[in-house]
Length: 304
Image 1 (cartoon, rainbow, N blue to C red):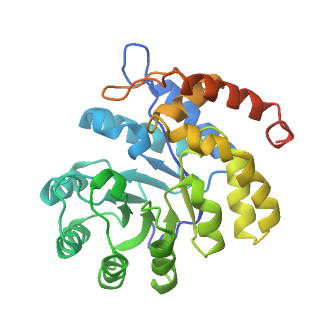
Image 2 (image 1 turned 180 degrees about the vertical axis):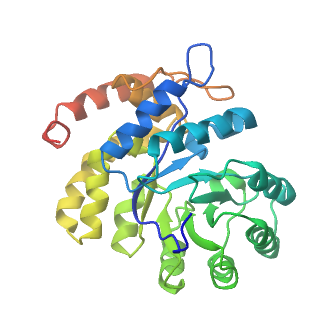
C-alpha cells in the first residue's frame, strides 16, 4: 500500500471462484481468469466477494486465493479483498491475520442476520476502521443482510473515519445512492453494486461499479463504464441496452449461479458451485445458453 489515498473508479470485477468437478478450488483456472481481466482492461479487482461464494470457502482456501490473485496481478491494478463477518470482533481478527502483501483495501459488508440499528452499524464500522491495517470500503447490500445502511450513517462514517475510503452501494435505491454521491467528501468514492443500474447511477455521478457481468464480458461492459466516465452517454446506452436480457438472467437463480453458467458457455471454467448453491436450472438454463450464443454473434462482441 502506498501513502496516497486510494480512489477507485471505473469497472472492477468481482471475481468468481472456479471449482473443479470434485468441488476443490481450481487455482490454475483462477490464475487464467485474473490475467484475462487485466488483459481486458479492468480498472481494479475484487476478490472474495459475494460472487466468489466466499461463505463456502475455508480460511485456508481464502488465503491461497488471495496469494494467487496477488501473484498474478503483480501490482498492475488495485486489488480489493472481501473480509466480513456479522461479528465485529471476528471481522477485526480476520483483518489482522489475513495476507497483507499486494492487498490495497478490504471490502466489508454490513453485518448480516443480526439486523443492527444505524448506531450499531456506525459503531461496527468505526471499530473495524480503527483496528484495520487496510483502508476500508463499505458494502451496503440490504437484500442479503436484512439491514439498509442509510445515507446519514454512510456519510457520518465517511466524515469521521479517515480509514473508510468508499462504498459499494448495492441497495438498488437510486435516490439513496444519489444522495450519498452528492453529499460525500471529495476523497470518498461511491461504486454501484448492480450491473443493471450502473448506467443511470454513473449518469448521476457515481464513480464506477463492482461488476458481476465483467466476469463474462469484461471488455464490452468495461467499455460502457469508460464511455460513461467520458460522458458519451448515447454510445454507452447502446451497450447498456445490449445487455438488457443478460442482466436479468445472471441473477434469476442467484449469484454466481448465472454468471458461472454464462462463463461455462464461453469455456472459461467448469460450471461447478458449492452447496447451498446449485447449477442453473431449466428453463432459465436454456434461456442463458441461447442468450450467450446470441450475444456472441453480435458486432459488439465480435468487434472487440
